[in-house]
Image 1 (cartoon, helix red, strand yellow):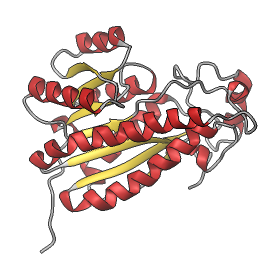
Image 2 (tube, one colour):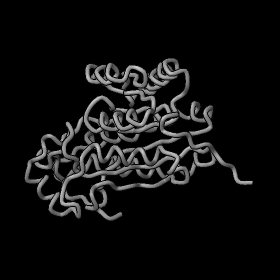
Image 3 (cartoon, one colour):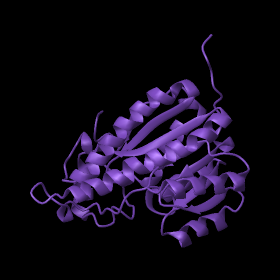
Image 4 (cartoon, rainbow, N blue to C red):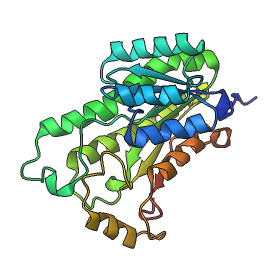
Length: 260
């Protein structure tokens, strides 16, 4: 007989969003809170913004500081979250981003790209996701259910700007998404990626020139740039019961700009 696993509603899940206090992370947090989930808002330096969300949703939101690159801090964050909600984290959204500004004119080009820049992005995107995933696994096994959603980019299909370091790290994260999906599938744990392009507007894209927004919109079937709220809503799908048979996938959410 085939093994089946439960697929709890969003309102029955405890969700950790890394880098969840601002930018795209805040939109993801608010999307889950809107659906009744209990949400752990991870932050590194944005304490005031994390606390403000908790004050708005005191029953279902919990703020926890941790550097996702530090395994000990990640473990302590999961422990605090489980104590607070009296249940383990069942869903992880790996959104935390190493320091990065989405402005092609200010990025390192091929001739001056430093390995240190690539390593910084790999450390934050891949090591951070590995730390949270490994720390979440015991609780997911305890619950008999798990959802991991990694945040990617459409730039490795459409590298129109020289974000070499960022794009390489996200491509590596996609590879790990797919290998983890294969490894964890028998335990009822799905691992997927949601990839976007330029979003209008987050803290990271605030430095993007207006002409770039206009150019992207002109080449998108919807003739507009995707908003962070629209992107966040797509993440809910992978955490929901509707996606219970979906794993190892990369969903591009950019208004149809990139066809994957």
